[in-house]
Structures are given as C-alpha cells and as structure tokens.
Length: 247
Ligand code: HEC
View 1: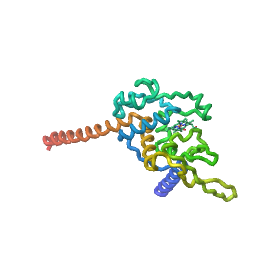
View 2 (view 1 turned 180 degrees about the vertical axis):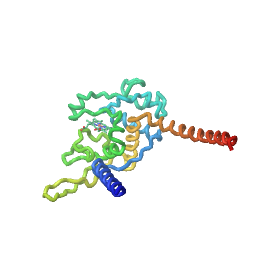
View 3 (view 1 turned 30 degrees about the vertical axis):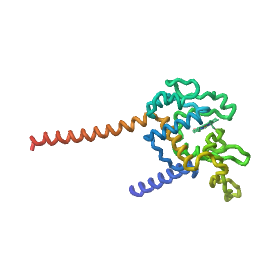
View 4 (view 1 turned 90 degrees about the vertical axis):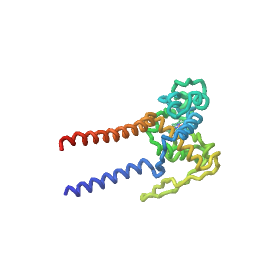
C-alpha cells in the first residue's frame, strides 16, 4: 500500500518534471557547460559585452574595478580595453542610451543585464544568442524569444541565418508552424565553431556578472573542505590518545 503510493508519487513527479523541462525548452534549449574558472574566457566575454551590448544594456551592479580584480586584469588594462567614454574605474557599467530612448527606438526598454545570468540561466542565454534569424520581410526575429525587439547585434560574427518551419495540421484542422532548423545564408566573419565559442564566452561572462561572489565562494569552499579533513584527522588522533588511558 505505502510502497505503491510512493511509486505513484515518483511517477507523478517525474511526469511533472519532464513537462516543465519541455515547456521551458521548447525543444531548442540544450545544456551548455560553461567554466567560470576559465579567466581567459571571461575576459573575452567581457570584451564582447562592452563592445556589443553596453550600448543599449547597462549592468548597474557591476563596477569596473571589481571586474579588474575578479578577471585578473590590471586597472589600466580595463581602462584601455573595456571602458569606452569617460567612465571612471570605480563606476558601474552604465549605458549611454536612456531607457526612454530605447523604448522609443525598439518598442521596449533594453533591460539591465547585471543579473540576467541568474534570471534566465546560461542555457537559455546561449540558446537565445544563437537563435536570431531573418524573416521573409528582412526583419530580425528569434525562435527562443519570438517577436523580440532586440536586433541581432552579433550578426556580423555569426552571419545571417533564416529559419525553416514545418507546417503541422492539428486534429481540428488548424495549422501551425513548428521550428525545424536554421540555414546560414550569409556567412559571418566567424565559423560556426568560432561563433559558438564567442557565445559561450559571453554567456560565461553574463553568468559571472549575475553572481560575482561565486568565483570566490568556490575557491574558499576548497579550503574549507581541506580544513575539515585536517580537523577530522586531528580529532581522530586525539580520540586515540584519550582512549588509550581508558582501555
Ligand atoms: C540596439 C540595442 C541593443 C543591443 C546592442 C543589445 N540589446 Fe539586448 N535587448 C534589447 C532590447 C530592446 C531588449 C528587449 C526585448 C524585448 O523585450 O522585446 C533586449 C533584450 C535582451 C535580453 C532578454 C532579457 C530578458 O530577460 O528578457 C537579453 C538576454 C539580451 N537582450 C542580451 C543582449 C546581449 C548579450 C547583447 C550583446 C551581445 C545585447 N543584448 C545587445 C536591445 C539591445
């Protein structure tokens, strides 16, 4: 009785889990493994970010000097390569575009990207940044974020792709389109593998920015574990010592 209830519970939760996983994925989202310890990747990602994203999106929780410290860069490297305009090293990454201007030009304000790594997660971000396509009217669209008002700002790297859709007829006769695959019509300056790496680097950077403390926390974690192992050993020696008199 109890066992069958447990089994039923497990089956229901497995079904619920796969339903939510599919709802979130739409079939397009795959797992990207990013490595936050790879400082070179984070540096490349930061460079892509300031060159291509900061014009519209701010990162109001990220200071340039924090970036220098976390990414193993000197302050002058940050000043020379990552700061445009007259921002100071102690300032946050703000954009020159006001949200009112963005709303006027793109129909929607470009949201602050400080914590987008946490709100959307790296798998979604990777899928989003690789799923821009040009529709039959020459407008940008995105299969992961349909009718998004952001243009494909990395098109010169990726090239221009179009999307192929299958037409599916439902039981009641209504038709709808289901995404099938992309076709790259105009090649960009990077190969598919190079663009893949650029997006991974950018996603790693966005993910770091969402939680800068993660880098330090993981490093501290190792020392805590080492300390606990050492402490266990000392405690064991003490125990042996105390019990010698008791026996
Ligand atoms: C020309 C201005 C512009 C540039 C440049 C730009 N974006 Fe955007 N972005 C937007 C706008 C506008 C939106 C809001 C889209 C909407 O809601 O339809 C947006 C939305 C987004 C979102 C979705 C946010 C969310 O959670 O809904 C992400 C992620 C994003 N941009 C990432 C980037 C990255 C990464 C870059 C640099 C490679 C970039 N953007 C460059 C204008 C821009």
